[in-house]
Length: 144
Image 1 (cartoon, helix red, strand yellow):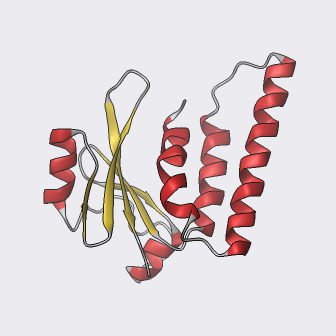
Image 2: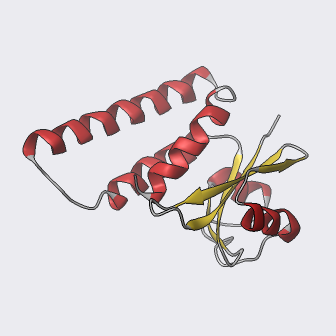
């Protein structure tokens, strides 16, 4: 499982309940498409790096989520954010990338404990590589 698949797996339980029926349907279609692509790769014996495919699926999912989603590297710099987070921060596409966290204490706790943390409807999920190394932190803000 690549990093993007790890993020997708982390997001699904939290986000499905918050989606409108139309957005839930879009997410289901993305999951079906991903399953079909994986089946085709298995049947054709294709062995390749799926990071590009995973990133496309993740981008599609992020577009339908109304929750703010921000991904940090282990230096606590924003690597990417979804449109909802950018809109809430009142910045344009990609302008959050490279900025530091506004709540470094919570992120540092996740780095130290390698466990999920939450406060005030903001959830911080550690993202691990297959070898067990911490890759980054996913911040998800539940929007009501």
